[in-house]
Image (tube, rainbow, N blue to C red):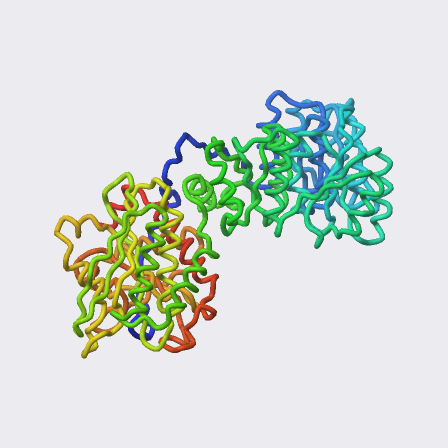
Length: 608
């Protein structure tokens, strides 16, 4: 970027359509959703899907807290019935209606009267035939309740293989991820902690006659010493664990593939921000022998994105547990995008930041700038791109080069993503602008093997900074590139994004001169709104544009500039790779990945 700017506000109307486009995977994929107005009616919808012909048994737990309900999925699987939830104080009418539809002869109520009140049981007795049996499974703590449910699971499953699941009782994530496996195998699940409750839990495990335990989660939740105590009771243990709850869920999925015949045909997606939908959906996923992929409402975790991409040939659809409040439309689209492209890998992007800044200050036409240009070209060629590096003339008699590579889409219309490679001496330009070029490079890598609607052109521009006698002697690479375009080629570019200074700051802006078409600005803001990313508009003040969008915008091509603000070390020696904030690069990369993959013909037409 050539200089700092003060803020100028501008009102901008945003499109509010929820359904953005998604590139088609290699085969037909469906989103099969199960949802109601509440967690209780969502559980009923899942029950109807799992047991259309009814079931003799029902597991019923509180819908307001998770500890008592966690072990219920394995019991429901052993019994061949659904897991339902109810308000603790009053019977949810839809739940009563579903139990009647199922024709259940026995209801297992999990937890004491504070979890499911006697009033709820009384209402059940009034609403159900007198022949229905009610069995309450409870203990004085969550650990004792889970042990009681696990013991009942063993009793309900004469084919039990002697293996138990053991998870922490301090959080629901790990136990819930194992729910589909527990349901499919009718396997008991115990909750444990490194506290006074552990002795009683170990005794309960021993009383089942278990011969093996699968410990869920890392040593931070189930310490190694506690695992050793479990092993002393059952004989052998193994651990399914990852660096976080999402990685642990993937390890559990891998275990299910190896030991329970699971496939990734229709993996389940449910919010990890709450327990209800994933818990009751575990029985349906167990029936389908497909894993649970928990995810925050804010976005699909990178590890899960990459796992879906790695198994994309096997995925025929997704089982969506919960409504759009739990699994928003943007999250559903991200799941479909994961079948087309891997995630934006921030570690790779940051490695490019470090490599580019290692060349030092990259003055226009200098050796360091040319070395950095060679680096960018080599990276693109390594991913299979045909790369061109046309010469750019500078007023001092030197030359620089642009770097150009293209990924052909199903349509000829182009989205152009570019950043400038040079710096203002003496700065090594970590934020300005290794961050932008690194983002473009990582997008080029992850999109190299994709098929999406737009053709995507990746560029590194030479000589963006002032390199002449006047304040207008800048943007040589982008200006000369635009000037050389034919009328037809200009018309093909439906949107240009200058990715410049995206590595540091507290406010993420989309910018433009405000003189040319503003459709690219609007399109990026629509995408940001859809995924919950704040992206206010900031107009470039003055006569000259402050990044490489300027030449495109003046030529009538829809263009925008993405920038994080403010950077206190801009154009100084302190703008190093260490100065760059990885979270800012990641947010930029994720936004642009979704913008490209979510662009359809109508979106391209709207740009022009």
